Amino acid sequence: MIDGKRIAVVLPAYNAEKTLQKTVSEIPRNVVDDIILTDDCSQDNTSTLARTLGLYVVEHDRNKGYGGNQKTCYKTALSRGADIVIMLHPDYQYSPRLIYAMCTMLTSGHYDAVIASRILGKGALAGGMPLYKYIANRCLTLAQNILLNAKLSEYHTGYRGWTRKVLEALPLDACSNDFVFDNQMMAMTINSGFRIGEISCPTRYFPEASSINLQRSIVYGLGCLKTSTQYRLHQWKILSFPIFKK
Ligand SMILES: Nc1nc2c(ncn2[C@@H]2O[C@H](COP(=O)(O)OP(=O)(O)OP(=O)(O)O)[C@@H](O)[C@H]2O)c(=O)[nH]1
Ligand SMILES: [Mg+2]
Image (cartoon, rainbow, N blue to C red; front, side, top):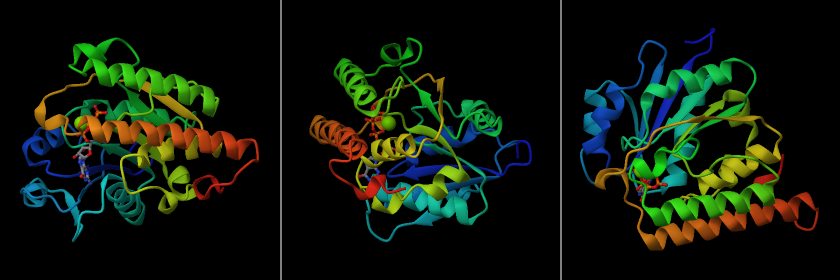
């Protein structure tokens, strides 16, 4: 709890066995009330390990995709009474020690959502982000900031925090079940006028923390541009899209 708000951390997991324990060990248990792992039909022992670590586990009976997995994360966290939900990839790419800082940005009342950015500061390349991902991240961010009329340092982090108000307001079921879910959710948050804060976050790249290949990265990048273009067309009242229905 922080300021009387119930804090949940959700871990959308897929084959996270090798990195789960390290990730969970750095979650500040003194403030986090609920740790939920949703297992998207992993082929390793992610669920078994998660139960051993004392997490609340939801298992999909078939692979629903990254976005489908996050839908389960947020529904579960809300149904278990969360006021603040921090989404963290369980691949130990991000520092769980920043959960407290992210939560206090949300409980302060200044922000409705917060992202932990790898781009704020100079740590991304030092942390091992491949140059092609860094350049793609910067170019997509520039394009999205222009199309969304926003000023974020990145849109692609796997470490985000939300208030209950945001999660209840956004029509998440209208979003993709694939990786572009994250990007659609950011665009929807902006469309609904919610205030987004950012903190800087160190990143680590190592084989288990990064499984997305070039082809999937390209599909994701094009999906991001499509999302922002849809937002612009929606704002100009030229076309309407279900993800931007308030
Ligand atoms: N549900 C589901 N999740 C997946 C799948 N593939 C990867 N993930 C999860 O999606 C998250 C992001 O994938 P990563 O491979 O870490 O992506 P990345 O290469 O680190 O991407 P960047 O952090 O942007 O550089 C991880 O938590 C994975 O466990 C999948 O097929 N289904
Ligand atoms: Mg990763």
